[in-house]
Amino acid sequence: MPKSNSHQTVEDILPGLLPWERSIVKRLRTLVLECLPKATEKLSYGVPFYSRNRMICFIWPPTITWDPQQLKKKAANLAKGVTLGFCQGNLMSNESGVLLAEGRKQVYCMYFKSLGEIDDQQIRALLFEAELVDESFKKKRGR
Image (tube, rainbow, N blue to C red; front, side):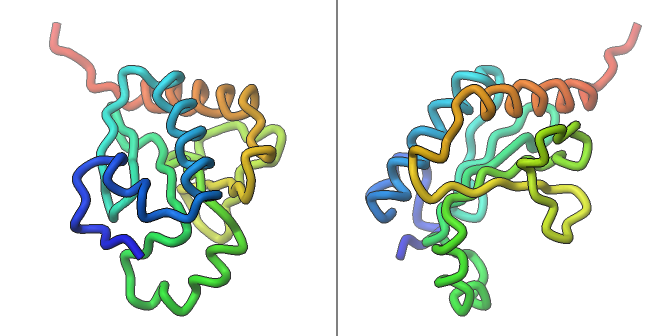
C-alpha cells in the first residue's frame, strides 16, 4: 500500500495502485487536466487534488488511506471504486443525480470501478460546472 507522505507527484502514486485503479485514475486525471487547465494539481492526503481559487476536485484511489481507521474499511472502499470528489459539490446543480452527498454537507462524490463506467461527456460537464463554481470564489481586485 502506498504511503501518502512519501510521494511528491501523481506519477509517484501510480505504480502502487492496483491495475484497474491506475487506469481509472489516469483517465480521470486526463479529463481533469483537460477541463481545468488553470487548476493546480497537488497531492494532499496522498491523492491528487485540483484547486484554483479553492479546492475544486480530487481523485481518490481506494487503496490509498491516510487514516489508520480507514484500513478497517478498505474492503468497502475497494468495492466502491475510485472516487472523483467535488469539493464544492453542494453548490453544483447535480440535475442528473450522479453526485452523492452520503451524509456530507459540502463534498459530493461519484465512484468508478471500471473505465467503462466513465462517461467522458458527463465528467466534462461536471468539471466545467465545478470550474464555474470555483470562479465565484475569485477574489475581487481593488479598483
